[in-house]
Figure 1: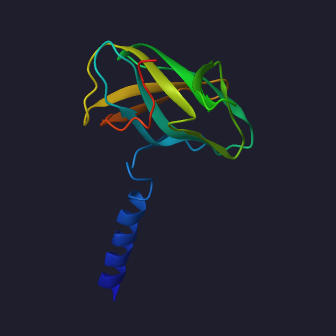
Figure 2: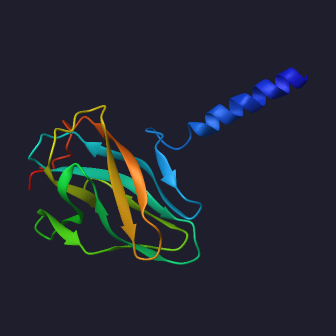
Length: 159
């Protein structure tokens, strides 16, 4: 009986470790963090995008005020939106509000991190570092996996 209980407990532990999402990538403090982050593959000199979920488990709102990486000239937070004429446009965001007890999705067709002027090729299977900067919270550094960029959901990452 004790052996069966131990095996069951071990199984639950391993299953819960896999429950953070398909990529399984989670970086957080007990208060603010990110999960399911990934970057599109791209070539040196070009641009790419990074996507993730950003959450705030505190009782106070905060704001993402920027990001940085050592693999590119710059990182900007952009918002893609469809206008009344069904034309998609991207606008640079100075900050993104992170509500108390809330989550913000960074995904194709919405908020995303534009990584501009790549200093190296980003190939599927590689990892890059992205540091998130907040108005109140300490910086959070993520090790972001690079995934195949052939499916761009209609977005041209060089514009």
